[in-house]
Image 1: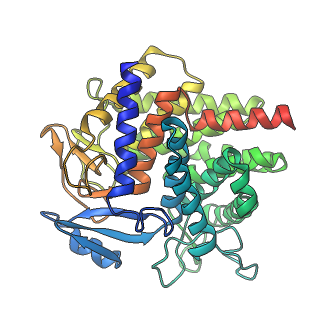
Image 2 (image 1 turned 180 degrees about the horizontal axis):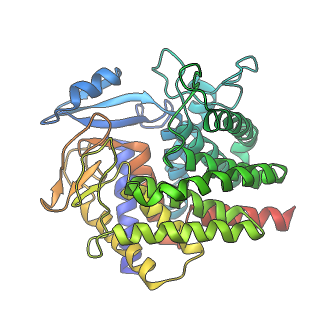
Length: 419
């Protein structure tokens, strides 16, 4: 009971951070959620960040980077629906509804133009501040996965915004772009319209998870998507041991989700690859702190640095996803240590921009937020999506004993029983 109370208190603090920190202006969610807070004192990367992301609101010691991104907004909307359920606070559900209204009706980030060959209906551009198209494989993957999970949880929102229809259209466009760019041998003469290095799981594995979620809704996609997933992960597994822990976390996250939606002999293949990947992550993890070495190219590196933008957050969700398949005291113990670490380091500073958040990086040797900065990563970037919302999902699922894979499995099971 004490553990549950501790988790609930951490979730309530984090929920209030979203409402009070300035990342939602207005705090009702009517105009969506900003990408992140950037702390500028002592941040050598802040000038580059402000040049790269030229929309911000200042406050003493930092600013809110105001670009609205569809993936971040979907991540927060889903988190708020989970918070409404566990905290029994309707305000979060109402904010989620307003964020989705912003996304589908006000933001202009969703393509609805059938004449845009590369970006047909269902495709989301990177943000509301970009002058030219910027369509990323990873961002659109989250938009597909989370739109389908929200639609399953809230049929009224699905009906209002045709969330499933747009998600499936987006998945179709993504599959076409993935095949064209992943299998292309052309280089200089080939114009890549969608962005992201598909050979890295950060982009490619997330695509596979999104396509698999689409196949769970429309089983007629299953054969084609499963063949693509098997081909992709057969390639990735050859190189995964040499990749950094961030890429390994993305691979495990996606493999476990795919195994959760796949039926038949292919499920065992995906599970075997997931088990192999989980072993890599567990072996790389410090057994006492549960910290994975920070080694992503957009974050400072160090074995003592807890990277909560590109590594530790996705690894936590990935290992949690494996709980559906791998019953082991080692896995459960590591998940509990990750939970304890997150609760211990949750920001307790009195400033409203900080209290209740998780910043981008924690230095275990110093026992404080730190470790350095890059213009998109490091301690002084406090992301709404990518960090705080996914870490919130993790704690909600630790409280309920579920996972994102578990949520997909429940949904598929209901569809199979109810038709």
